[in-house]
Length: 465
Ligand code: UGA
Image (cartoon, rainbow, N blue to C red; front, side, top):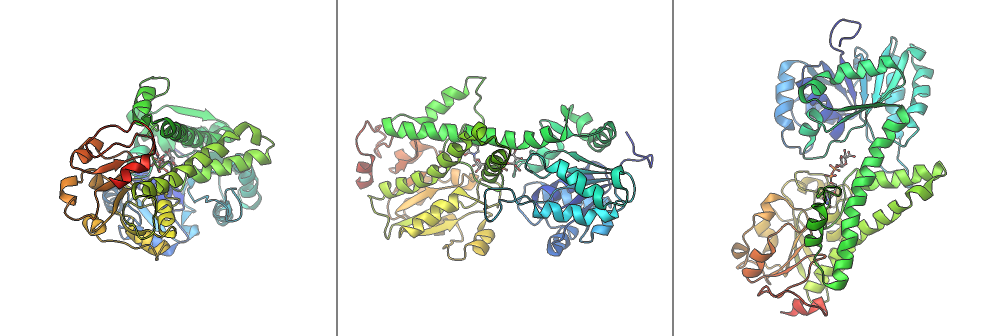
């Protein structure tokens, strides 16, 4: 499908953060002419010179090749987006500083700066995660200040990409959702995604604006609920000495439940799941429907408890007092293959340990620059081995492959005590135990170093062995 120029639509992408940069690069990689626009000049300068300003596997290579093709441009001047036929809105919607609501400041700024340049029929497509009802409000706002008035249309196309899999999720998504108010908007969106849809037979749900907005928050709420569900079971397992890993495996083998996102551990973090469930609760309350999603308060609370349970487990493993205990904290990013530390469970645990008097040293393969910037007081090591020297407890917080592959026998001569706390259930417990380590994890029975399973009583007893 083509636009009124008889060619593929030209695209602009407003906001070149995680979502926008990935979208701009990927769309250019499949043949579109794309201009990425951001108010942050340093971000634009980096991207224009071929540097992706965050860690995402595969994206730097794709940026290089698309810049070379000449189809991808970047600018910090919104007027440069005027030549595009379809404008994708990809700015961030963080948690509001004073409440649980989504902060729509960047969305409004982007719309207000774009509108004066819309002097012909064009489509603005929202991809940011927003409270339901935002698209309708933005349509009015756009039309009020765009010279083309009612000829400007708004559509919503929520984005489901995961950090670490951003390229794959963009070019080969499980599904696409088009929230539209007219057949013209549907056809325009279809033309923008035709290469993706055709290449992999991607299913498309075409719906109204409100439903499209809801799909995104409903999906993230469901994922968060699934994770908190298994972590709630982990709490119960701890009470009775049962094994949440076996429980999760058995549950996941029921095809109706499925094993994905059923991994117990330190819970969810990042720039999306935590703030999205809170913003959803907030919006539902505004709509008079908080009761329908009140369970999300529990989902959030269970998730928070994962962090405090991890701190308790370290205290327990160390013998009951954290004061002066040397902890090698492995990981800072909210998940592996990302340098994102927003609402990172790993850092929450580290900071609680530090506050309790532990002497923590953090190492993360990619997130250290962000930690240094945001938390200059957190002590950092320049390698895993440096972090673990003289450690009383080796604490795995983010399951990077580099940590999963560690050989416990190599570490033995370096550490103070052979105690490992695996908050992500990522290590091979038997391997560590048979190397003489006390291996501890949430929701699984503590065992002696010889591998005999713990059969009740106070788990702290093992800390003294
Ligand atoms: C999440 C969603 O998965 C994406 O579909 C969505 O597009 C994105 O948010 C967004 O709204 O932009 P992401 O934040 O990249 O993606 O991270 P996830 O892979 O969902 O992981 C979230 C957290 O849950 C991580 O901290 C991870 O460690 C944790 N997690 C995940 C578990 O604790 N257990 C699991 O079984 C899975």
